[in-house]
Every structure is written in C-alpha cells, then in structure tokens.
Amino acid sequence: MAETESWGSELVTQALGWLLEMSDEFAREWEDSDMKAAIFKALLGWIVLSITVIQLAWRCYGPTVNSVYYRQGMGGQNGGTPEYPSDFPIWESSSTESLKKHKE
Image (cartoon, rainbow, N blue to C red):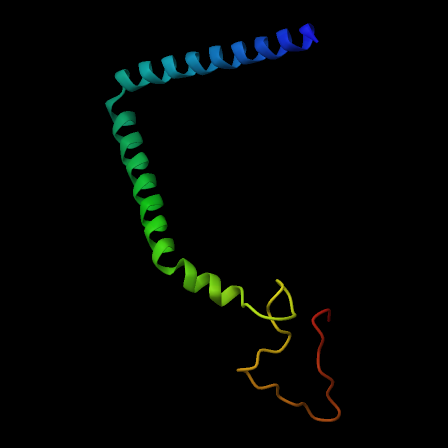
C-alpha cells in the first residue's frame, strides 16, 4: 500500500515539475517575442469573447432551442417526441407506392 502511495506522489511531483518547467519556458518566450505575445493576447481575447457571447445567447435562447428538440409528452424517442407530430399532416401515398420506414 505504501508503495502505491509513493508511486502516486512521485507521479504528481513529476507532473508538477513538468508544469513548472513549461510555465518558465512560456514566460521566457513571452519576454523574448512581442509578436507572439500580441498574437496570444488577441487569440485569448477572441476565445473569451466567443465563450461569453455563446453563454449570453444560450441564456436567452436555450430554453427555446431545448423545447424544439425535446418535446414533453407521452411516447416516442427522447421519452416525449411522438412518432407523428399532431401539427403536421401525414400524406397518404398512392396504392402502388409504399411508405418508407426509418430503417430503409
């Protein structure tokens, strides 16, 4: 049991050492190259802005989108979507043409 704990702590120590080494290398690169720093800041800003806008849009439109794709009620897939929605007519085909099934 003690052997497993020492192996786990050794792994964590190595991971932290690698992370510290990577952060030091990143800091040196950051200081050496203004262009890389500017590109990094621009991309990081773009990602933060995109995530913020997605969160705001989902907060506004999320319930609407969810209700379109997940209908409440009895039967059907997702526990609530009927096989034939009541607000859409089912067209009948000619006697020689058979209705296609989902598996075809």
